[in-house]
Length: 352
View 1 (cartoon, helix red, strand yellow):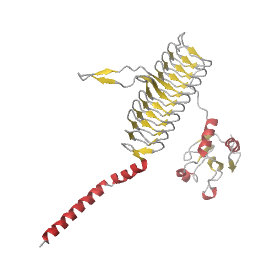
View 2 (cartoon, one colour):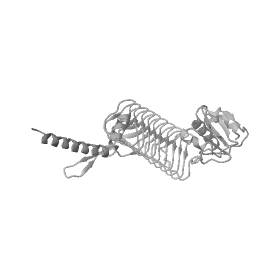
View 3 (tube, helix red, strand yellow):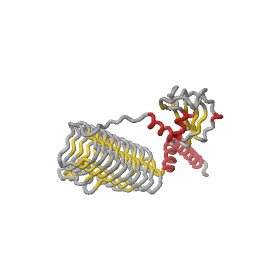
């Protein structure tokens, strides 16, 4: 595409060589001739003067007069350079389609299963008895769909996904490779002899519409009832959701987070990486849990938390500042103790 065509596509304001040909997209510090790059984070502004890209997307507030632009660099101004960059990335670099067309000969589909129109099943997909797969859904090789599983329309299941019996998946759901839905919840009762009795896990997992599950996530089936992820929930890779957890609409959870059993997470919650949440508490709507936060009590709506145990973010930062100064504070205390002891000795020695 030419720079002019790109500017028209993103409704941007262009200056420079409008006819320059764009072949690829690239990061600003790695770009070369024929590349389109972008500047969204001010930290990368230092690379503008040295970029070898043919064109760059910048914010409408970016002042080109204040930066020494490389000769021949075409500038396209847009309200949000990052969003515009992603739009162009999708346009000129289409993702390869890993899904087969139709049903592969090695896929196993019993007569009791129901397939909608335009369903794709890859090699060695195993579909259980009485399972139902909606129209337009694509399932990559080596997935296992258990008995009586329901999958909605236009879903994408990447290789090696396992959906245990009875689980229900809505429409437009994406499940990345290696995810497991519906394995047993972690429930055991201690016995007098020190061993454990396994608690039967009789419930299911339910994913509502527009949910995305990252690679190698594990979502346990409920002991009774449902483990439920509501509409629009997004999980990063390697997230664990325990039995009977409920996650509200449009909540996002980053990698390596674990949520213990029967906890309820509200809507529009943001949970960063490696967060740990105990069971049987409630995470309120619009809560933000920063990376490595350990949550042991229910939260308040719209509050940002950090640290272990979780504290309001600004308070946690103040505590962290004090903790980092502890060696110096300890030395000050020792010096004060010595000064007080010296003063006391003087007072004792000067008594009549």
